[in-house]
View 1: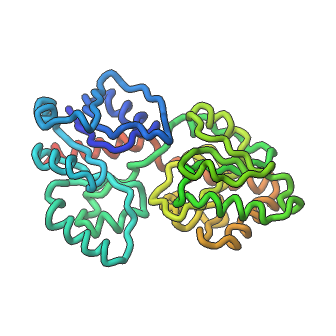
View 2: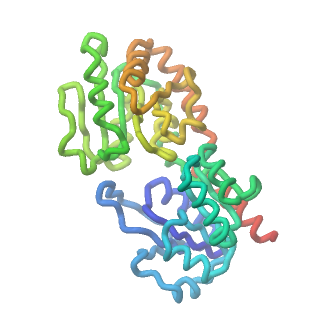
View 3: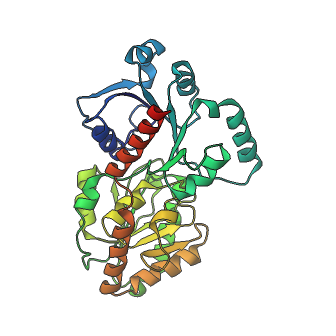
Length: 339
């Protein structure tokens, strides 16, 4: 089949999924420019044709003649016009979590009236997005989870936890990721109570220049996946303090590596990948005291207890993968053909 992908920002896990899909189908992938804050280097299957969003035209899409379309989100008017003009079976992919606000209620009504008829399927991240899919008018049968996953390398590179006492956070340095609260809370714990733990952060962004510096906090900057994977071999636990995080692929990556998790309640992946007290803990991202309590719980846990938590993380992470992504995509293709 010919499959059109109208995508936003490509990432390594997306490329891995597309490459596996391309082993059975021909793909035309329209994408946004590579994010300067995450300058990944990608390799694509030879059955994938890449086109920048700024260069796409309806003629190109009609000439490609797709049998199926995947559209990332409903906020790009150009993509919506493409979907409307092509009039092909289309899946809407999104990670938006539902909020009981006037904006969301009116927005969902507007979507159902104007755009729902363009889409036959909702391809969503996980349980946190199911309510949104329902509010937008998609039935349970039309809704498939697994849109976000992590690369196979994380699962394949899983090792037993070392005793290095490294707490890691992988996130962009922007307000929504709440990195300053994490650093401040970490430093509020006296060194003797930290028991030798170090805080490691990987990423970059507009707030990187104003990062909090301390000998027990290591700022690694942006790391390519292979570099990050190597450094994470010594990671003992993972924390993500985001104020807003509809999903969080990094959570799946860390769970796949078998790390205990500390996640804010704003992280969507928490619903699928965290079992409270079994493989980690959750906290209010506005509460330094809650975060501090969870950090101390991790710092005071024995190596054996942390390893048991890591094993549970790995088990929970196995529900999602690039192979599962392809199987879910194939279900949509088969259903659209049957209809």
